[in-house]
Length: 117
Image (tube, rainbow, N blue to C red; front, side, top):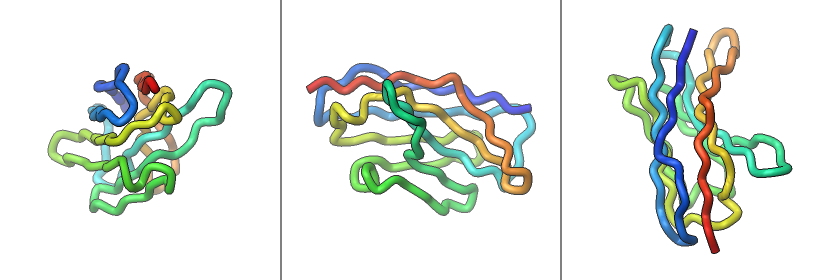
């Protein structure tokens, strides 16, 4: 079993920055991929960025130039630095851990990010 605890969401003005953190605990493997998805009201959950333990990153084109994902393997924690935030970035951001072999996904409880115009 895996537990994911997110922190760092909140309300910010357009153009501002936020940093999300997600700490994983439980049964973890070095091959797990970690990352972030988001879900805006009335929309489907979408990929923001993923990172492997080796540092390979997959990211959405809409945020590649503004958001940076990083990972501290020793702390089992993944971060999302969000800069130049826009109102359209408003969403609930979910931490994700995916098993490489089985493809099983684990999710955090979500953290709200609200960007005002």
